[in-house]
Length: 198
Image (cartoon, rainbow, N blue to C red):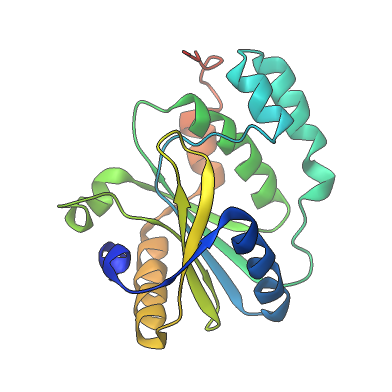
């Protein structure tokens, strides 16, 4: 079902409208699970100082700024956060950078697993899987980005049968994934600083 999300009717929202709508749903989750599927290997986050430092080739500053983000990352209360990060090789500079943040998120309580892109090849015969956020049984978003990897909005899908099927499939893929920390230690921690080309 995840591979069919793009063809399912939904309500299109711009970036600001998506974020304005997302947080009230998030607040209503309580102890229910928020699922997130991350598929693309590169995004642009020009509003995040650490990403900017990485993109400018200053890896040490990027790491310092990532560490300064730690106090803001907490999941002691609220929903059960579960993220599946699809990974491909070679590791992109973005993914190497994002993994530093995901490691902190795991240490703060978020449940994150990693799955190699080969494991989802059967779902990608025509296109890559979309970026998806599922907020319990409340709603689901296909998160949208422009060709350069900047967030431009989302499509909200309210069809309960679709939401349930996507949540079940994402949970199944998540169960096949590797714990992020073991993946990080083996594949990310030993990498040299990323080479960023502009």
